[in-house]
Amino acid sequence: MKLNELTIVEAQEKLAAGEITSVELTKACLARIAEVNEQLNACLTVCETEALAMAKLADERRASGEVDTLLGIPYLAKDNIMTAGVRTTASSKILENYIAPYDATIIIKLNEAGAVLLGKTNLDEFAHGASTENSAFGTTHNPWDLDRVPGGSSGGSAAAVAADLCLFALGTDTGGSIRQPSSFCGTVGLKPTYGRMSRFGLVAMTSSTDVPGTITKSVEDAAIITEVLSGVDRYDATTVNQPVDEYAKKAKAEITGLKIGLPKEYFAEGTDPAVMALIREAIAELSKLGAEFVEVSLPYTKYGVPVYYIITPSEVSSNLARHDGIRYGYTTHDNATDLASVYLKSRGQGFGPEAKRRIMLGTYALSAGYFDAYYLQAQKVRTKIVEEYQAVFNQVDCLLTPTSPHTAFKIGEQSADPLKMYLEDIFVTTASLAGLPALAVPCGFAASMPVGFQLIGKQFDEATLFKVGHQYQTVTDWHKQKPNL
Amino acid sequence: MQLSKQEIEHVARLARLELTEAEKEQYQEQLSAVLSYIDQLQEVDTSGVLPTAQVTGLSNAWRDDVVDAWPEDQIKAAMSLAPEQEDGQYKVKRILE
Image 1 (cartoon, rainbow over the protein chains, first blue to last red):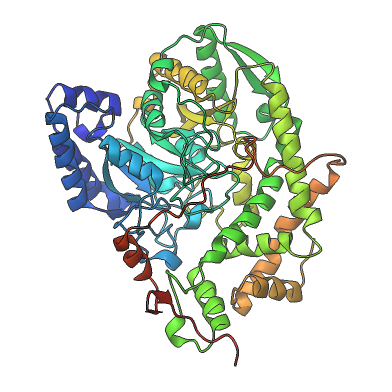
Image 2 (image 1 turned 90 degrees about the horizontal axis):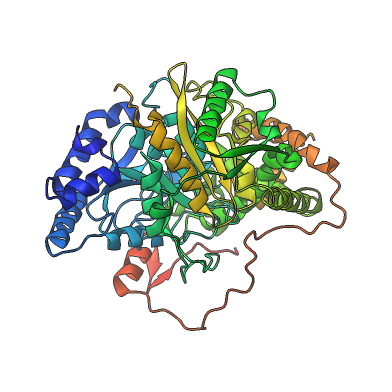
């Protein structure tokens, strides 16, 4: 087996046994990137020199007796996560040459743990999208079929993990942006509870639902990284001071007697029958492991997308106001005579079509005369969504649903219709609106393309999701399948 | 929900976005379609329901009112991203004629 194909757990064993070094591991990943990134366009920036220096340092730390779980493990970060000294573009022309002066908190935590940053991955511009086609730097291709999208917005990270460009990748999830591409690429995607991991240093999109998270080759790996990244951060006032579980250890517990809800609204017509058949098989597998399934109902699910597409553009329009052509980013400063035209032209030329569409939609929804009908009403329906989840979690330990109603679609197939693209998020928005943790787990292939199920848990109960996901992976090997590239 | 061209221009001005005529036409059509879809929210009875903006129950996350010193090199790195600066401050175009 090639080193870049290892999971974190496998690599850690070899590193600890002295069979391999972090430098070798890092070189294997860099070689793989050099080999296939031209086909995939998964990485926007590769920082080879810095990565090799960090790997060398990790090997020295290990030689001096350190044993951290991520010491010497190479990873990629979505390009909306700030990395000091390494370009952070958010896949936007407006940030094409932006170099962050400081690291995001999650990057600092990974640095301290000794993980090795290989580079930055492609995304839909400012994380607005479900296909990575909205990137200003070209779409990412799905490693399972290069004519298809990898999903989005963390499409570069999911494609990179699926194609073994790294051992794991960081993503961000605002309304499905880790889970949906994980389903499309056959990777494990964790969106943690809102406030579980710090948002400090993320390029802000929808501040009330944004979370960073992980894309990995196994559930156990996700649990390991979650232990490192979780916790309160004085630079993000929305992080919650809840104890950080021993997730990796807890993932190994049995699931006998665990109650898993199947919300009937996610099993209605509209999902590809081949996808649904695989979800049913996963349910049967988990039943054999001792889980009990009960049908539950979440009737407000159908309002998830409309609520999300008011809340998100509204917060986007506010968060993207900072891109003004004055302090950083694309600017028409030199050709303008007054301040207003610097704003108008820098923003008009710097933002791509979907970012502008969301800024317009949000500005409209928040404007005088429309606020009550749109933003306030959406926030009230959001309350209904939160409450019905709370009621359901009195009956069950977690929920299981499809992650997406279908497998990855063809590049260009639906990019001309924004509303159709918004409906991609149908199964993934409500967990974001309620701040719940959710985990996408690969469960088979429909017409040679990966399919995943989604587990949704109670706030701060990532442990149950890891347990169910990990136990499933002890009896299945869908997560071990590799694309032919 | 059908938006007029005037409404599109008004919103673009509020958002400080200079749009081409083609963009205005495109957004008029696309935003109208999206808003028509979103209009289904009006059918939900939300009387007596409080709006949700924060989902984990936090309120008033206090900290001491102390300024953290920002390292010199980071300040320099941040300032160097601006198109024009003077004496450690951003320089902008005139606002009034």
